[in-house]
Length: 405
Image (cartoon, rainbow, N blue to C red; front, side):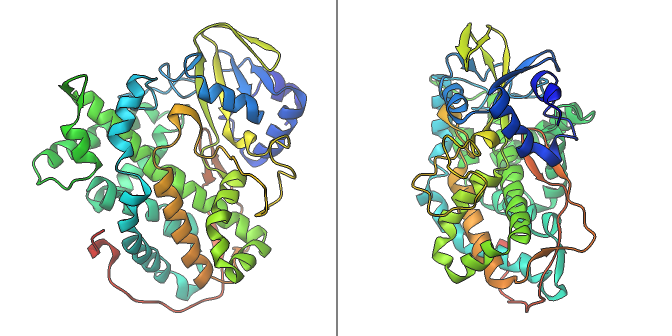
């Protein structure tokens, strides 16, 4: 993108940015790490690792309570706890965290692997698939619906559509999608109230207290809404971005097939390179200097996690896939008090998915004639990803949704 556009007219929701996102962010890190855009009422764009980390950790100066999108989303119910600052945020987050520790999600592994195998079985004999629709979106959605929410799988397609549309600030259907999502969650909560307890996160929220009182209905909906948004969108995007990289760089899947013990470390490096959670907004609560620029109270700032992952001052040779990095403090899951609650679950799902995909799919490539376009606002993912590979055999097994975690 032209320098003048990057420095004065930067527009993160522009479709022209999506194909050249990383090249544009690299140019901004070089020209002006803290740049001001005149669009959407004016906002600052933060692209260097240390600046992004500083803003994310300083919740007192850069608040989340005024919204996470630029322009502001027309949310029906605010997302809790990401749109609440400490100390209230810590109390809400504590309700959820206990249900997403490595120990709590470990029993989901066998059922998740069974689901992965079933999804691969559905397309492996043909030697081709539309990866986003056939694997990347169904995997996190089905596992989270079944094990995380106790929600009916038949609602999945509609809820996924609402979650995707509501996350695009300038989509004309965003407001209606937020309302539809809140209505679906309200119905889910009411259904769960009338069912025997499952001991899951929804039960915890329904029975929780805050400041000595039960949670209000809007608080319950806001918490479940955040779980839905996090459970459906970002892991699917990560899987799509990883598969796209495998198709373009076949030496990566070849190495991981030869050394599958490297897959957990590879997940971290791939998240640094291709994290689906690319940016988020904050609002300054006071006048402050950052990167040599004077930010005023009330100014909006846009933190670019995706840019931080490519900052050469933090990651030598940032464009290289390097499993031998001395450190990899990537920010794919955010940072500070609002760091992603579901990071353990995402890591587990990604690890299992890569283990099975790399074991069973060979000669991965983008399908002939396919043009890959990216959804890009605060999250990034291929809109579609037709791939081809050497046909393989089915590995029939039990239905994963009949396997209890």
